Image 1 (cartoon, rainbow, N blue to C red):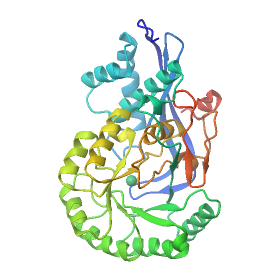
Image 2 (cartoon, helix red, strand yellow):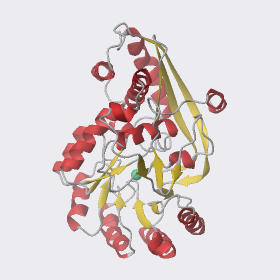
Image 3 (cartoon, rainbow, N blue to C red):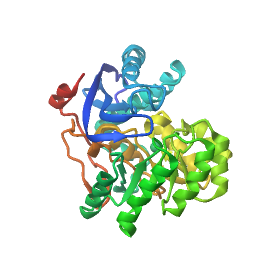
Image 4 (cartoon, protein in one colour):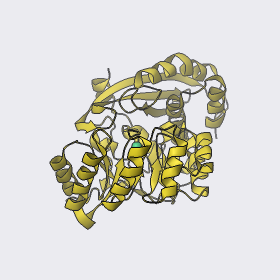
Length: 374
Ligand SMILES: [Mg+2]
């Protein structure tokens, strides 16, 4: 029975900086640590929910940074949560959306925490609240982004040998098209049929570079080209799709359900990367999935290099679909040197096991949170 007098008693936010196991080299930034905002909401019945928002490389990826997300949560969203009588996740998110524009990442952290708390209150996992689990394990690829060929090949080989990953995404776009294609072609040659290889340009190419690069990558046996052009270049993406030389995936472009619908109408992608933070919440991500899936496009589960908190929130959602034919990139807890949750996640046989406990199925290790807190 839900308590009709339920209120939110406390809203806490923590900004954590966790080092990565190696420098993570992307077209727009090199990351040596990841900064994330952790949110904890405490209800009057004692239940708690945790959420997270993070971005890639501060403001190098999008319009929200970990610092701005924390400020938005503390100054604008927390007062709304504390002042309202609590009715439901949907009613609360609807009220927030009516009072606060944009800030999709911050809103997602709140929705995540509300669902986590509801799951604890009802004794069910978030996947059950989102429609019911279809899959218990999700395929997870690994990103090779050391920037060095030998390191990337060694890393890929170790992952294949230990049966942790056999699909690899290589981050390119920092060097010339020829240098980048030579790099990924050498990795594909080294691992052969034991692994599949995809590339992510993170918006770094011009149209001319993309048209040429797409053909060269297809010839090198690369199976997918992600976000070659700037996120706003819908026509350019549409042209690449029409060439049909290599499947085109959009990621940075997919900023919520309405944008996803526009992209689908424009036939701008073969595959859509689904990110709960970028979509603006678990519900919005469900809508993006629905739009993309019903258009006939492929689905792929993306990441903002989140901690286990948001990674598992995404896993809870993705597990409610059997339509993610391109798998997921929910590997980021493995890129971080340390974890601040009490549970250890099971990455094995190329897959992640979705936790089964109530809510998200994970809990914060407060000592570790305090240690990494800025
Ligand atoms: Mg990407």
